Length: 493
Image (cartoon, rainbow, N blue to C red; front, side):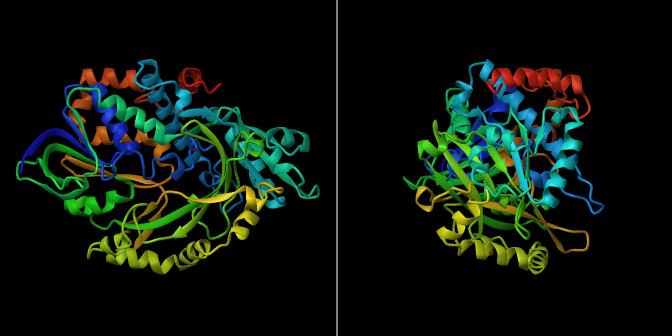
């Protein structure tokens, strides 16, 4: 069996691997990088436009990023953090557009106002307090709030037309929000990478074996599903950016840092409308509050989407329970991920989240009529015949071991890296793709620490992300400078 030597192996052809590969090539064009993907083309699982919300997750409209505290106040720290992380992605994409690496930004990102909409006295009070706290910070200074029927008619006509006039409602808006086609973005990045020396893309090549040699380098064995050919790769660094498939591969690696991690898979579905006369009346992402017992990823929203250049409306997601870790995975993925090291945390999470499990299973068995009834909370005039059901991507939420040996269900993303810096994996889901650039900078800092300290890489990093090493949360002047550039470059003004 031939051995292919490389500096870096990227497992998975999604937005995370593509972002890391792009960063490494910008920092050191001489690096020999191999990307392996189990499907026959890239960006077809969670990264594909139809498999995620496409929201440039900036905390503008997602109410679950600003939870209500026990004393009735609103916590905004997570929203500030996520907003700053998305600004890092915008800076990175802007640089790539300016250099001609990425095509016209409208091919992957489009200005779409981000709005939150609530009804009822309690939720209106919550939204008003949320607006007061967020708009006082420079990251959210442009957020508007209204309870005016006339203003709401202008902001979101489909949402307020023929609504009960006695029902108290309120909304917030950030005009420079965005809709991102992460599939198109990723395919454009990989297309450019393929034009570079020392980069190879291996499609239809799932990883069958991964192990670390005594010299610290990694052996990765892949099998071409079409030809049956086995290839053995050896690399000094491996990144597992395989979405839901990252956890099983991390477990196969055998690194100590993988101990105690488990996965809780959640499926999703959208209601989709492509009728031009309806789609043309809505140009925003309108987020509401999640039903009691629903996971954060199930916050309902009515979205303008532009996927592969075509506009559509999406409503959902409707969550569901599945044992698959990937949309095109195996029903045995969940049971196959159980180890002696994560059995107790997984059982602990299963026991403490029975209500969540029942909710997810109940979602699976909803009828089309039931789903459209949920849609009418956001679009009172919705007709069943105008909407069709479409499967979204799989999400594997993180189960993490607690200090007492139990388990905790996490609803974010996390980098797990070997202590020697030779392997890293990204686990979890939302906000996911929106914060890819920030997450991959974290990988570089943890796995390439000496190079990241070098003058050459420091200078290049600041070309890619001008705010690198500084706080957009604390520095208003810096935020204004970088945001002005990104909104202009990416045509979001």
